[in-house]
Image (cartoon, rainbow, N blue to C red):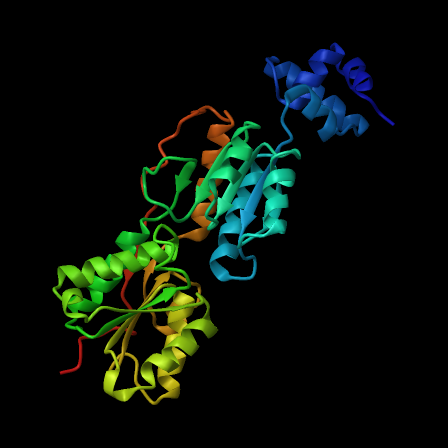
Length: 344
């Protein structure tokens, strides 16, 4: 078995210099670093992550907390995270958590806080104060992706402006002359106003109020699971009462919108002639469904979250312990064939 001493002897440097060159920590002349790396490759020496961790205090491992791994948005974010971390020389440890309970407590109190991760990225998970405190006590930087208000106190935060997104989607339908609009919101939108679904609900209500519709009770919100089956079931119930049918639906996600389109078709309604539908996300199937949507880039958000966490860890030329994470990530309205002017 080769050792660092063998690398040092072949490269003609001290063991300390060889260790610094291979760990990436400490100053080593570039020519010396290349010579050490060549020597290590020649004899098949691989740096032990545990040994490097003892020297640097870093594990080169990031903990990622995510509520779902089998939904399109979260899968896209995860792909962006993983690719960017790997290219930066970091590993990823994934923790699938959602609601409260003993399993979630173990993740935050033991696996993330006490085990060896350098930082934590929380994707679409609302962190409790005690969870953040457990990480802060052990100097674990935290980046939250999604939800919350820009500039809110707490961990570094990235995400789109979900309230503005909800307002934009609703305004698109209002500008087409629709006044009977319903919002298919995500579960818990009213109870958790700073969640993604809660902020999109707020945006819908803002636009309806500005149009003078909410005060007369014309604003209606129906909560459902943010999935295609959830949108389908909610839309069936909503549209199954002909006397109260809306002419337009703002769905909290593209998957909810897909379900609503399928429900309308089952009830013999034409999209968009009888019902206009707009979603949020920019799902890969949106064009196939002809869905008008407020498009975002979940994989790009994953890359941005890694860039931010590396800055918090002091990696790269632009290391910054307090980066500006308040600016929302970009979105755009993409108009397709699922929306048209309100019927007369």
